Image 1 (spheres, rainbow, N blue to C red):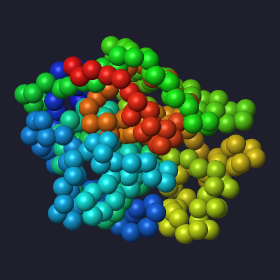
Image 2 (image 1 turned 90 degrees about the vertical axis):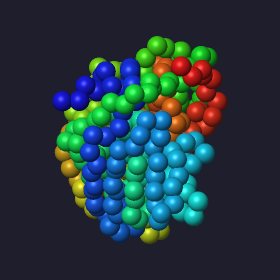
Image 3 (image 1 turned 60 degrees about the vertical axis):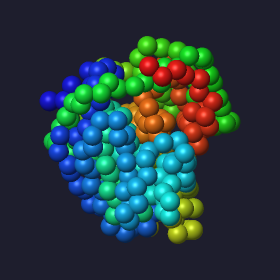
Length: 279
């Protein structure tokens, strides 16, 4: 069994012990996409290959798209990369080759569960080089009117997440003790009924179905199409997305975060202002 706690926060770099491949429809287009993940040597980083063109994961090669994190390649964009990156962060994958067919990462049920299960199956291989970290050295807080992020210097990675809407308040704390495959990976994307109708009316979410996300009623704030896997499933998914977003920083960050209703765009702007030292 993979020791996620030990591997995520300390020690040497890791890559996959074996490769794996997954297929599925993209959420936006409905077209079948595939992703094949392979091991890479130490100090390689996360390398994406689309149509034979390589791009290394970094802040300069990603940007916040429409409710997703998007990879920017030389001649292409690939959307919804955050769920796969979230798994890479949680499992401690430092080096991997990601070959993609299509312009989306398969969306599956809107969680990262399938990616997490496959990672548990193939396992990890330790490498010789030490892992590097970005150590937060100054407090920082930022808000965009609807979301909020704050970080303080800390010797570990810690996230206190809050989701608020009307009378609803959900909370979850993610630390090195959190077992991602059980506590975060199953948490699904969610959307409100009015937002879904508006998106469909302009031709979005062509690959979506009843199993692609949790649809909430605008009025009652209750799920319309499925039972919840957790009473606080929304905030758990916000953590899932946050882990994927910050992994686009290109190096693991150590700090104590407090996040409320954060968006992909807010996380990106926040990371641009982060003060840190590399250890």
